[in-house]
Amino acid sequence: MYDLKGKVAIVTGAGRKAGIGRAIALRLAQEGADVVVADICREFEEFPGYGLGMWEGLQETAEEISALGVRGLPLRVDVTDSRLVDEMVAQTLDAFGRIDILVNNAGGVVGPAPVLAMDEQAWGKTMAINATGTFLCSRAVARVMVGQGRGGKIINISSIAGKAGRPFLAAYSAAKAAIVAFSRVLALELAPAGIQVNAVCPGEVDTDLQRWGWQLEASFRGVPYEEVVGAAAAKIPLGRLEQPSDVANVVSFLASGESDYMTGQAINICGGLVMH
Image 1 (tube, rainbow, N blue to C red):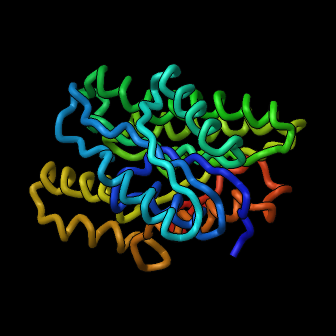
Image 2: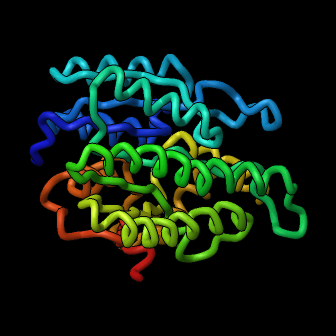
């Protein structure tokens, strides 16, 4: 266990009940941090049925955090809107007075398709959620961290798709690769302020969003859902699907003082699917 007592963390994209964000938020709370959990809490009008994190799930996660003896605060935010991101940061400071940890987990893939058939709006939305959202949240929180003068931790959730391309996921792969490059630049810029910036790259994680993707693939290929999931698991050297807790374990280390000499890294958490 790591000691995060007295620390305040923000975790974006934490509204899905079976998601990486929720697992990370609960793990940080178990380590003693007060945690703000944030999500958009509405459907995309242009892409109905996508399945975003909703307010009820966010509230439940905040209640679970509070039950651990620390403070949980649910907030609505659209990470692609700088004004709303700034509001989230201001609300966090009003409630807790400081920010020590930011986990940029909000992300997703909208309208996956072959490049030749990809909708331009879907490309733009996917890039905005993942890459632009990471930039806007990092910029807003880093300004606070620099002003506090106590250092800090920024942890960006990328993906192995950003290191190894995936068919039908051009926008998602490009956005996740952008997060890795952005993390390295930000790490260099913020190092003098004692702020460490790292990215983590999960693989085939058994989440609501991943299940949606598997169902979509099964539909495209005309095969049973179980066949798609089984094939995904069979490719993993460690022999099982990744769980959200696997990601949370590494994020909690990066949020702690044990990682103070690590910055600018893109760490694979994928059971051996990618080894570079």
